[in-house]
Length: 177
Image (cartoon, rainbow, N blue to C red; front, side, top):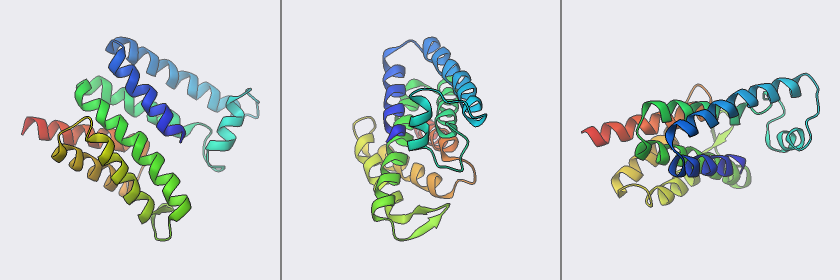
């Protein structure tokens, strides 16, 4: 659920703020994220943040890794793609990852890759499609949600890095073609 909130805050910032300010805010959040992650790994307790990470992060993961990777991919996309492409790409990651996790933990029976479930991934793709229909034409929304789902399932690296970039590339190709 943290990805959903984090992603929607970033989407809102991209829509409401000038691009240079969002770039600076993302850079600041990445830098702060690395500092906080390092401090927690070294055993320091940071009020509110340590508890939040304990509840939301996998026990074997680097503290805050998902949020840091999310911010890095948002920054990359914001620098290299148009806002009209970046907003749906970030929304796709936020929605798909959150819904797939929630639904997969509750109803997932068929594990497919990296502990992810077919049921969770499908639910994430459907939720992403429904949300993207408010931002994109139907064919683009379907293609973006499908690509996001496939990348989430098959990506050999953290999907927080790959989903936004893959969706941006797809939407760029569709818009140019």
